[in-house]
Amino acid sequence: MAEAGCLRDAKFQNLEVNGNTIMKGINTLQKVKVSTNGDADLTVTEALHAGSVIVQNADVTATRTYTLPSPSEGAIYRLIGHAATSENVKLLTPANTFLDGAVTFLKSGAVAAVTANGTSNRSLTIVTPDAYDITLIGVSSTVFALTGSVTSASTPTVADS
Image (cartoon, rainbow, N blue to C red; front, side, top):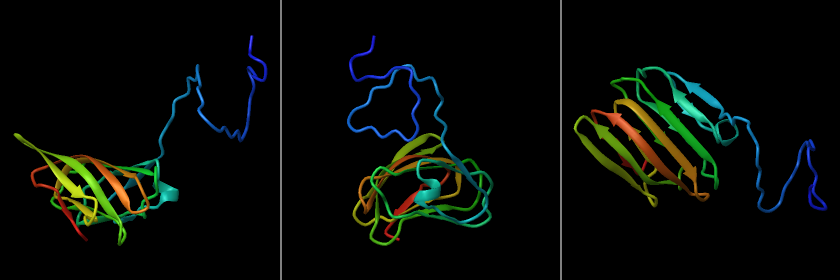
C-alpha cells in the first residue's frame, strides 16, 4: 500500500519534480538524437545538437570545421567520425571560450594524450583521422571539458584559434 500523499499507477503529462527523484521499474530505452554531417562544415547549435551525437559519415575532401556554440553548463556534444581521409576535421569554439581536458591519441604501436589548457586553447584539429570519438561538456559559460579518442597516423593539435 502506498504512503499517504503518494499516487500509484498514475499517468502524468508535463510533470515537474523538485528535489531528488527515485524511479524504479522503468523499462524504456532512452535514445539519443543523431545528426549526420557528411563532407561539409557545420555550425553546431545548442538547440539542434546538445545531447545528441553528430556523425561525420563521409570522407572529407577539404579541412572541415565544426564551429561550436558558446558553452552552457551541462550541455553535452558528442562527435564521431569514421572516415579514412587525407584531410582534417577542426573543432572551434567562439572567441573567449576554451577547451580544457585531453584526448587519447591512438597510433599503431603508440598511445599519447593531447591536452588543452582551459585558458587559451580554442581549437582541436583532428589531423587526417581514421576515426574519432570526442565529447565536449559545458562546465561554465566559457569552458568546455574535452575528452575522447582519435585514431590517426598524425597527432591531433590544440591551438589558441
